[in-house]
Amino acid sequence: MKTSKYGRGLLPTYFKIVGIAVILSSFLAMYLLRYIFTPEQKPIAKVISLNIAIIGLFFIAWTRDKIEDEMSVQMRFQSMAGAFLFGFMYAVLHPFVGLSLDDPELDISGQQLIMTMLMFFIFTYAIKRKTSK
Amino acid sequence: MKNTVKVERAKQNITQQELAERIGVSRQTINSVETQKYIPSTVLALKIALVFNTTVNAIFELEEDD
Image 1 (tube, one colour):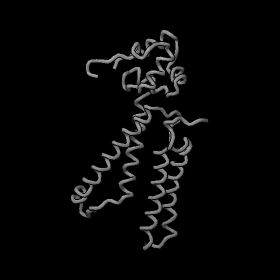
Image 2 (cartoon, helix red, strand yellow):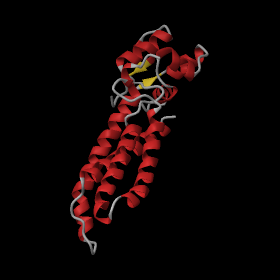
Image 3 (tube, chains in turn brown, blue):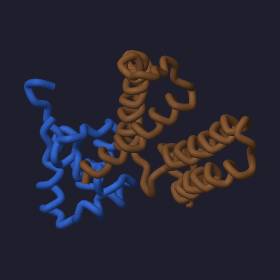
Image 4 (tube, chains in turn purple, yellow):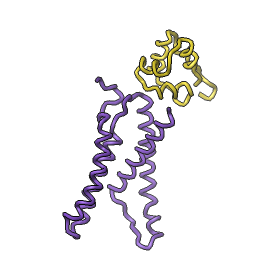
């Protein structure tokens, strides 16, 4: 099947299912790595499972719809802009929220930020698709 | 921007799905154009006009706030 020019650069449709499978496998990895790694290596296990989850989220976000057209491209860009703004506000406000806690965590990792932005993008895009029906 | 896509579609007895397939977009896009939630590009407007065998000006009309 010929891909429309609007869907170029995006992953094929079945990658949505691959993405969901990868996210589920990250939960499994999180569980299994607890037994494989020693307590000192736990941060590595956390990083590995988080990275797997990010890859899964990326697959879902970067997959084209069955029909990609100019409106879906516009919605994608609007959702991306929203995710960027949300990520910016998250990065700026997070330390202040952390200060109000007993055990403040003032820094956010790149993984946390990209995961939040990907989730925001997927959620916003899904809402936009739903409301356009 | 106002448009008469729905009227033209009714005149020619074409469903949103049929029109969408003819011009290679999703049904949601046609629905959004008809409800004025989405303003189509020049290319899409020309394709719509072509299906109805008319001009873009006959289907799409500028409003004061455009």
